[in-house]
Length: 101
Image (cartoon, rainbow, N blue to C red; front, side, top):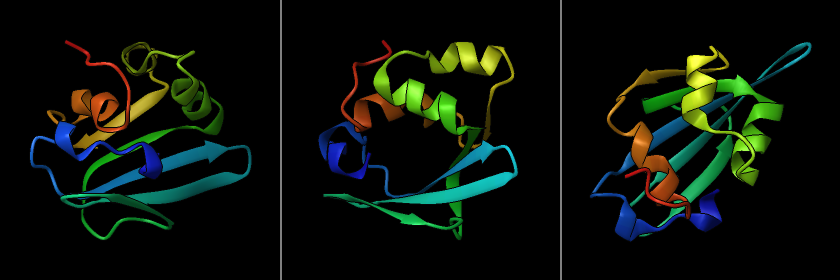
């Protein structure tokens, strides 16, 4: 995801996103640090995430592949968001996907 980051689609956002991936036997946290010109990924929880996404590893991979719709995952209770909900719809564009609008 960090390599796909498009700073022109960020709307000026800088900060951290936390992605919590669940699987049988546990959970793994990843942080995407979003800067003015690039994004960096690191394993571990964010210190002050603007938005936290929690989903299964399988659903995350399906979303990245374009085989799962995040809105449907939210409605099905398979994707949980905490934090700045206005940031969530922009994520697709920020990381190389189509605009949700």
